[in-house]
Length: 300
Length: 300
Image 1 (cartoon, helix red, strand yellow):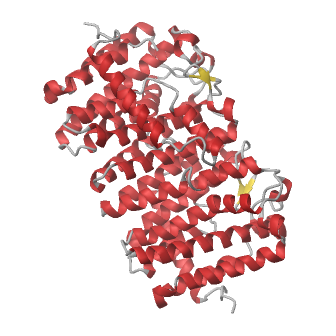
Image 2 (cartoon, chains in turn brown, orange):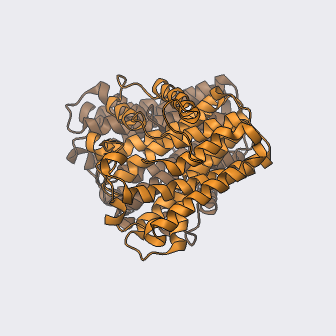
Image 3 (cartoon, chains in turn cyan, yellow):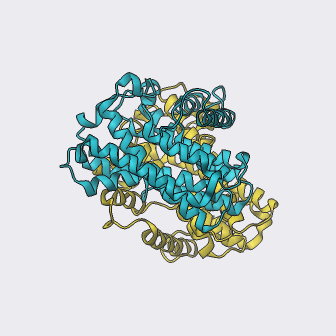
């Protein structure tokens, strides 16, 4: 059964409420545009407060809620993941990286603020993410656990490592192992970490962390497969970023290595497995189950 | 009286012992070059393990020692500051920033590994710094305090903010207020933070933190004034980086705004004030007093 994503549906209204909470929080906590250094602050806010699906912070918030946490506790952590995601997009879009002009339907950060300021805005957002957690999570034990996990999955062993392998693989022959490695590090790692953080900030048991990690890994990979498919099938208008870019840059993508049909099937299987992984959490995981479907049914 | 920096002197041998400890620690903890993603790991190690004065980590280690801490506790924190410093140099040297080819007597990171990998190596080192602290400081209360302070002084309110103002001020008319602001944020902030971290990781009282903060601020500003002077007076060979760059790029520097003589006098005054700030710490601060002299007497 397809997830009901129509306006007013259960999942969509829950996601919208949480997106609003998150965006209000980010707006209140990001440094203000009228304080020096103004351009830096403007560049930071430009990329964070520009919409987007907010999958990572939603995962943190929904997981924390499912394991009995309060949204006020998980909000700074969720916001931190969105800042890390935003920084990674700014740096990925740089001319020396993927060289993209369009993101979320707007000019990319360096197109508006110049390359130097874009590098710095990314650096500042990454740093700010750690500040948000260290400041916003009252229990130092939980703060420290979240910070360690976040750094591990965002750095050389995770997202940045994936981006490094991705860049070095541009134009490489289709290779399923290399593809899996790139996806695992570049996208899956931070999505998994954002789900895990929802457990760590509440301080639940290891068994819960294991289930949520498995869910995060499967949702994370499904998300990237859909991203690859949408890049081939969607339009620039629909996506808010340049469509067909992966093919032009000869990126290793799922459809390129496995074909579109198999890729779509794999995403579906992953969503089903993600939901199964949450079985031990019972009905409290209801919205997370819907979110797994949403990830593979999305059109942008 | 000039500080004795000759080989075998008290300060120099203490600094050398600590530099060795730090470099061994970094070498053991940075991801190995033979593990994937190899180029990223190589690029990270290239910039961190390339010598340098190690002022920031030395401050953390010497302050922690002066307030009764153990070097094993402060070592991960000291290493984290050196990683943040190394990341900032990599990004500063990028063509879109200061566009420099030479650093510590070697080709800059992007000259060796390309711009994309240099951006990522910087990102990975910044992330790694937070991981080192979250992992290496056993007491979560202390870890959290260090992480918050470190993020605050390294980000938009500190070092990155200073770099943003610096870039926007290239070619500006000499303006003492603007100069002071750039120096306070760009260099003084992280140097102050590295000294403060030595207190925070040990968990000393607020009065000690106040003294050490004052010391760090004065040493930090003196350090940057000397950097400005050395850029004008030193040779590229001596400095290991392109000399005279500030003038070519019309940077706001101390000698440009206040003249060389006044700059030198100011650095001397700051070193004296830095030492006075540590008076309450008594003889345990002995090496920190010598370090303040070293900062204004250094030739590179």
